[in-house]
Image (cartoon, rainbow, N blue to C red; front, top):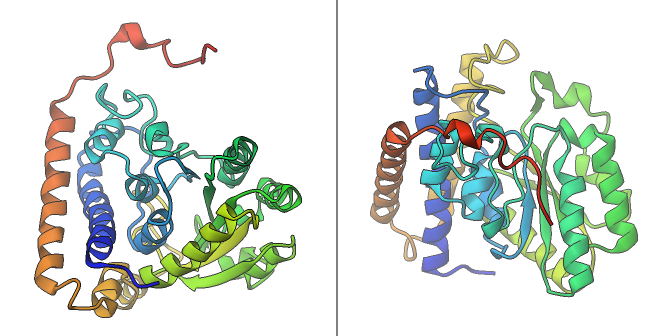
Length: 321
């Protein structure tokens, strides 16, 4: 399905904001002002945006430890995200979640989490709720190639098929589970085929190609909303940074990373494939500049913001019904 100019520019803006956000975090992390670990999403932007452009605010996603891209693609406020990562009270979770636990239910972001393979079991809950309420909603879960080996992922896939739940399982195959290569750790060379064995449609796409991800997700979302049940999408891309900030990356060479940046860049691939009548290079350049300015402002605000007051130490621990 062809996208109009507004849709194309919106999609590129999301990818550009993710890239600017992550590149700036790479710089800011070196100052020592950010608590906790940071896992950057650069190189995988087309997956999060290609998926989330097919979702509504009322749909839900489950994320991973590498969740900044998912948050931005789903509509989380960038200034609130940056404040959260800096541990400030203005953050989306009042500074208590940090990089790996950003959540915003107002836009359907169930939360990033550090549980490997944790998102599928959370997202099927949202999908079951949507089916029970008959509200037309769907859910999507993001899982890495390493997380695809987890029993929770298998159980969630089987349950989704049995109950015919409106969910999309997105496997982000970036080649490494931390520092362990997919070719070594995943017995089946085709993760999508493994998912298909549970009895659902499953496809493989180029995770650096926004248009390919978007079309596969459009079909999966349409099937889910029409009562057709779950779909798995395996998207292959490569992260540009290490597993975490500080990773020595002894499992690959700087030359390999440079080649990935040159040939497997989702933003450049978008530029190469987009209809120039709908999105000119000048328009895309302007979006990149605006993204950098937005992230720069977010950093300045986060640095100036206050930390959570001590009296809030025990709040947000339990939910009262």
